[in-house]
Image (cartoon, rainbow, N blue to C red; front, side, top):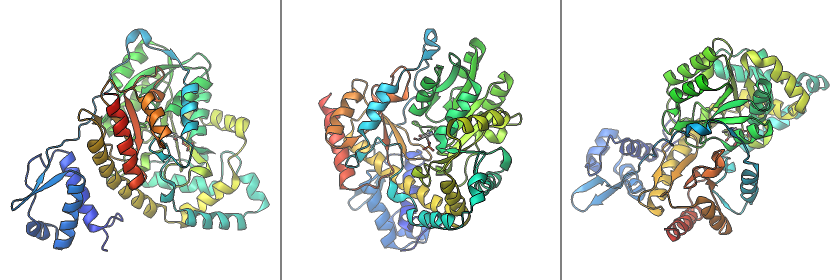
Length: 477
Ligand SMILES: Cc1ncc(COP(=O)(O)O)c(C=O)c1O
């Protein structure tokens, strides 16, 4: 089967292009699609390929066939959710206490037999495990006694060089000596936060936020000032500025690209404005960029770090979402706070596994990482269409859902009366996990929202999982 450059088959590329045009409103409901004959001419494809694409689009519920007339864009529409409302001002800072809820939910969804719609990780079968194990074997074979010491913080020199090279390809100058290797992005984020705060300090965070951010604040006894996130544009900068003016905020934590859970990516100008804002207020911006490489666009969007002239951005990322969660290899470019972060790294965990660092360095050099990424992105993009269709098929008509331009999460706002903690318990008992909205907020907001992971290819189990969720949601109605 012929393939398009991204790793997609030709009909998949056509499905993707038409689905994207429909969801972007370029092809309107009721509009007629080109006939199969015309489409063959337009795309220089065979009738069989066009039929296969149209059949798939029909399966997705995006088009319908009208006998003797042709194919039309169907009238069912996928809506985007409105931005969450701004936090009320008398609650401008909140002590964080989410551990019990987050722990009980995360530990209950670990069971390998559940359909992991609530998982934070990509579907494991998508990782190049065989290729990685070859890199691991090579790294072990070539490891000398001296390497064990050389991998102490800031970390393996080859790995840092490979990481710096990737930034350079994006037009970002990253000094090899100022990259600190960590145990995943989570350690990087925790070290950065610890380096710039003391107990009782206020930190501006997103709402909804990655629950790991809430856990980090709780561990360090920090208070959260929640800044609303628009599902498309990201953090509300105007509100952030008002809060910076009003209260003594010591740091800001943001996912500027493919935010978890909303999938929002700040446009370049807003990222630049965010960096200018924190620089003006002289506070660090802890930038979590773990999903940055999973964009669907032709080019990766630059992170806020690209606009950082004075070192206020503490940029963090890892290979956990793209390559190998279990290797626990992440990094940070902590800017002007580099020394504090490196010292904290030594005090808290001394080093990141020498062998894991060397294996990832070898993979980056020889393993075909970019090819793997292209395939992964293409797969996630196609699967997003399938999962959106399942949402439209099984959830109530007034459900709203995001359509992120990357990553593998959908944020679904169910009708307001739906209690997602109840839904979580009922679904889990039937072997289906979801990530309930309240774990993404210090005040346990978003009680009718869920985050769904769409990295698992749709099969009978996934379809059954959606039927189960749809049934429990209907029972609450
Ligand atoms: C937004 C976000 N940041 C950071 C992390 C942690 O990444 P790592 O596994 O590299 O520690 C996760 C993992 O779920 C995440 O979703």
